Length: 444
Image (tube, helix red, strand yellow):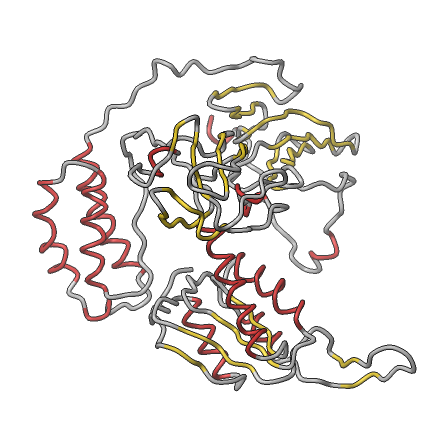
């Protein structure tokens, strides 16, 4: 009898007919919203990210805004949040600021420090070897259930699992486990399989310091054989020796650093250990005996990779321009992701006055399927505009209509495999170089 008196939950039916016309635009200000959570009836929490995110900021703090349907207003609720969740009934908010976690009521913005969780004494007991055994079996289960080819490229999965299982009992670290995963998953012979993560010791890293230069040795001294220019307006391509007021040139000698005389018998990289991002005093000059020398202050970089790649690209571009008498463009694509599309947009469209183009995708590390680049390259001339004054031009604008060639090598793969295949399939021109890597079976 008691059960029969209990109130039954209401039956919810969703009317899907013409549902698109019943969507309402809420009166919230335009912002860079990146998250949404529902609170109590009529309440929404909106996460606003910064309008610009710098390199390396994978999870920037957000600002939470609370929208109330009754008042039709969105008020700032909480700042500096890196993670948040709202309870099922909408009464409580779990959020993270820095390394601290908090629980607070959703009725009003929490006061500073309110609801802080005391987690210092919270511990978890872990048996790494038991975890590793579970992970080992889980990896094989994932491949069994989700590998794109149900036949697993002909691999006997049970036999492979039994073959590598004895190694489990000799592992001493998570790095050992990752290495085991790499070896056993190699049995699938597939282009894209990734292993990473895990608990590793927090090893203190000692940064070096580099000046963005090549050196040779002359009369017992280090001499700058080449100074890389970079692009000093770009923080990612800052060249230490060409900053305003420094002006070190190739052919000059590096005579001293950090108050220490430098000779060819010294390890130059040891001298600059730990100097990346810090001001360092150098003494440079035109003569190895120090006559005519001067003091300059530079800020070394942690890596010269970007500087050297830019120099290689620009050397190639200038060589193509020189050999063709200024008629042929050169465009390098380091990958088919952000950097590759940036390079294409920067170098291709700025050279559409050229009569032909060399697309260089050697060492292309892939990324996406670059059909956008193919679409841009195969734009045919549709019409010609002739003006009474000024230069004539063609439609569509922003295209090189003449011959095209693509350079490839065995170090280009994934999206770097697909791009030249599309290039040839579209009939854009010949491929020149070595056959690419051949790893197009991927992930999604």
